[in-house]
Structures are given as C-alpha cells and as structure tokens.
Image 1: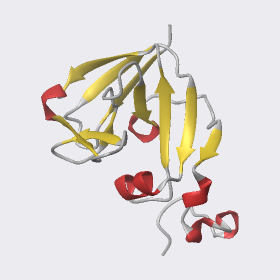
Image 2: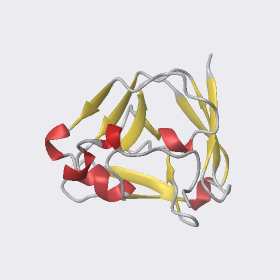
Image 3: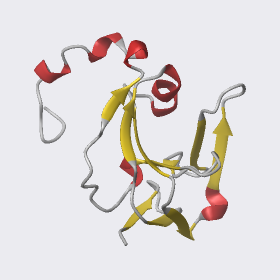
Image 4: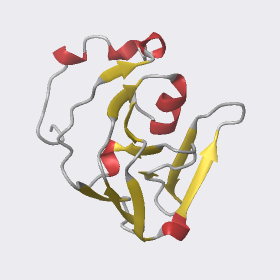
Length: 133
C-alpha cells in the first residue's frame, strides 16, 4: 500500500494518506481560482485512500461556498490548503500540500471554459530556477 505524507506551511498540521489516488485534475473553475489565488487548483482524488492526521487536526478548518459543493479545508494558523473529507466517500488532497513525491501526472485540465485570460501563452513566459534579479 502506498503512503504519502504531507503538511501545512507552518508545520502544525501533518498527515498521512494510505492508499492510491484515482485521479489528478487541474481545475480552472472560478471557485478554484479564488481559493488558490492562482490559475487553477491541483487536486488529487480518491474514493478508497484513508487520511490519518499525525498532528494539528484541531487547527484544520473548512469553508463551503453556500449553494455549491465547493469546499476548502485549510490550516487556521497559516492558511495552507489541506486534505478535504467534506464530500462523503471522497478524499480531495491539494497536490501542493504533499511532502512526498507524487508520481502521477495530472489526468486533465477541467473547467477550461472558466480559465483566466492570462493563462494563454504561458509556455512562452521566461523560466527561472529562483527569483530573478
């Protein structure tokens, strides 16, 4: 069985995921843009994997956008996105909160009809290994 570990930015919330992920999507919907502050969310999904909090479970809070299934779990101290078990039978894990390497590539970009206009042509933007001078 595969085990992944993860944590929030401040290290208060630490967890393990036991099991496999079913899919990995890059979601460009407006809700995901707002809650990540970026072009898209990068989320892993599993119907069978188990989430085990190692520490900081009491620091985890959640927000559900009224009238939707859109829910975000996050550390109440540093605001980092954390695994979400709010949808019954589904574990949603923000890929960026994993501390272990994720070998699965994204399966698809979803909700592209909502993508940010500034995403076009990103492959042509200069790339740097660290903050440019």
